[in-house]
Length: 308
Ligand code: NDP
Image (cartoon, rainbow, N blue to C red):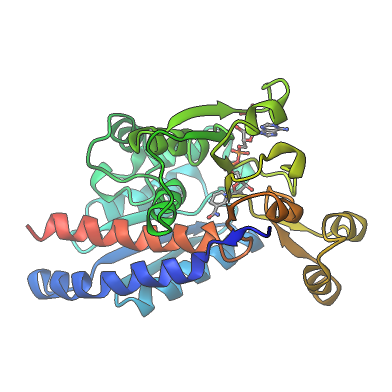
């Protein structure tokens, strides 16, 4: 039987609709809308698309979204100067530095920049203080993607308590906080990664399987037991015709997208997994829209904290 498709766009819209009243209340008490600053360094095309989408969603919701840009030749000092300027700005509730930063800034730059964002404005939830608060199940800003996955499961009436959740991926921004948030929902959690031997043996034990790997269609039907809820966090752009044809052999509509555009978005989960799973999040239109909705929710929460 085909899996139930979890509609991330609809859930994201519901969250954003619910934020409207809260945004009005912030405006009434602070005399200004919630303020989000997005810093984009360099000209990475995917980042530009993500930033445009965040800008539009925030502005449509009635927030003030300010875009700051720096060229890819910018120094770490220049990036930190922008962050510090908005740390000190009372009209700014949230600061988001779009990842990845240009490689020229060096390996450690990204963490240094995330570390510099004041914890009360860390609406992306990437700072070590936010990570600690999430680990201890305390109030703070959880990273938007894993927080969005929890919202998605809750709003889809998918029980997490007592279930075995398997998370593939252990990054600081997705895999690890995802595992923590599932644990706080009383799931029993297994984290897998590139050094996990026999991945399929682990993932087949999952009631809830979250794939956050960054490898197109890596999780196949062989990795999934019937009845599993599959959450596909991956967003991969496939530009190779042979790879697209292999992945979308049984999905002519998706292959048509590739033929039209020369590229197609693919999750970390193979589309044929929908024949085995009980429920699945699509790519696109699954976790992605939730990530943006949770960014808005975190910014409103930050503004509410300032208006008390
Ligand atoms: P990272 O590259 O930081 O982490 C990938 C993780 O996958 C690592 O822990 C890695 O293991 C693991 N991994 C890699 N290969 C394998 C393998 N063969 N078997 C098992 N595990 C493996 O990626 P992110 O966490 O930042 O992102 C993951 C995916 O989610 C990407 O596709 C990204 O584009 C997408 N994403 C989507 C968002 C959304 O809004 N929907 C937001 C953020 C990310 P190890 O640690 O051992 O190297």
